[in-house]
Image 1 (tube, helix red, strand yellow):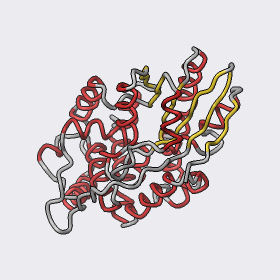
Image 2 (tube, helix red, strand yellow; image 1 turned 45 degrees about the horizontal axis):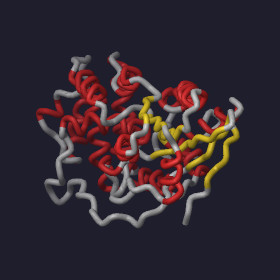
Image 3 (spheres, rainbow, N blue to C red; image 1 turned 180 degrees about the vertical axis):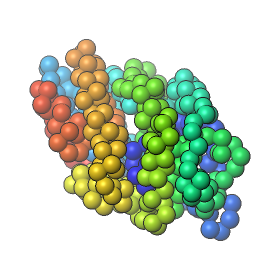
Length: 310
């Protein structure tokens, strides 16, 4: 489940472009999602951030979801209505983003060690996504496809992630939509090029799938996000079944905390330019000493949590 927690939305753009997530094909495949929409409600952590005489907002997203989760609750809708800039990690609807991800996913890389390649193939068969088209992708992307397919066992799917809905809302409302990161930097994180790094990435993706704890960990993550339970999110490393040693810990740092200063730079720049910014970034970037709320507070913002309406 660790891959999903760190790469969810970035992979979603590629998967939608390639159409490689099929419906369930057999009784033991990950099932289709129940289409019944969840009741409308505020979901996920939301803060106001104020400096220079005006207010912006900081929202922690989840990159998968359930039907109805893309409809904002009253407080999030109010924040969106008050913003004139929507800032995301990347614009998931940008064709250039999808083209580059597809190009990178299809670029030849060193093969996996045979035993690891067989494990990946077994995982693909178990998730009912094995196909010649999938076999042509970067091994790390293939592991992400498996993880996203298995997310259906937890009742979650990329179709109801937050970012595509926020991008659509920004365009529909005539708001400026900005990317806080580049597709090149995210592709480098998503799909390493060196043989050792590729193998390590796939190994980290397969471990929670093979242990059987991936779906339960994902349910816990989604529940914590839905309730804006920052304490559980901050404790993710302890219960995620994805950090076994210092190498795993360093990989998690590179994929989350190490990116936060640059994300804070982008949010600060948009706010300083006079924009009322609705900045929406994955919820794991919001917790810990290097989380965005603390980084922005250190830069002189007054940061206040907005209690979800229940």
